Length: 385
Ligand code: PMP
Ligand code: GLN
Image 1 (tube, rainbow, N blue to C red):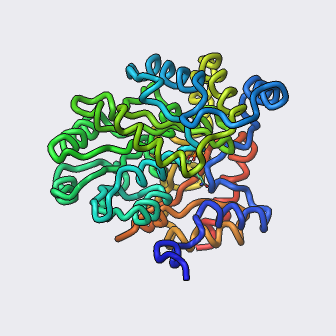
Image 2: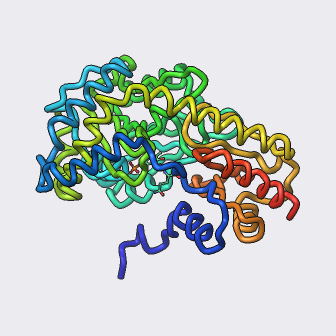
């Protein structure tokens, strides 16, 4: 009756855990969203634009001021030289950008290299587009990319590689060496890189995001995806960007035109305003999140949890085995939400094969009181085992 890709697919773990948190009244450190309302000036601008701005269909590739603002932002922050007219498309969030990219660039039977742990939308979208997943398994505590693993995954049939940096759920910002290695394989195999860089502004400890597109040989073969929801801590604003060379952009835009055609014009205009007027936000947001990361990590360590490093994203991970907790991640998370009042995400969900089963992801984009209560409840959860 239904398509085989979807027939056996579970509901996404983010929805499952947020649903359980809602039902049980648990503190939600699962799904990645801040519990603060987001930048007020930007929300007021959006409200003004709903009332006084354009509310009919905008141009299919996005309103010009947002495409210009995105190109300008990436020039200033990442040194990229993008032509806003031929190389930038606005989508309804990064999720639509991913779907459009896969639909536009995959021929049935094409191989797609993916890194596990992998964001849960990738594999079903790729299979539905006819792609064949070739999985590279990354493991804690470093989650590094190895030459041998790439050599085993890339073949003459490789069409795409999907690279999420910073990596959700691991919280890793890949070092330059790994980017260079991946670029080398893309060039040698004439593959296109779909770069999910939604966390590009959420990096800590003085890091600066380096887009794979900036590496030698990658400018013409990279599709760079961003998300205003992540840039401005407004995750429900599904406004995304796709940046790619004109030929790739043209193909992705053709898929986009029959997925959503456009994205609400008032939100697009608000994001354009934000990109031009919020430089102080791009300083303050990662600084505040870094402080929250450190607060959660310190609290967890004081309760005996082994905390893995987080260089970016809203997430840090704990290793249950190294914390002396005798449970797999899924059992721990289900009992934690039901019996200790705290929701978290089992990282094994992000593996298609041979899962790492002792790592649990926690979202620290929360106010101090939520983080402190979360630590106390996780300590309670620990005692269940
Ligand atoms: N990719 C990754 C790695 C994500 O973490 C997320 C959401 N957190 C998305 C894509 C989806 O972004 P959007 O909400 O803009 O669709
Ligand atoms: N990306 C968010 C996370 O990792 C979830 C987004 C979603 O629920 N689709 O938590």
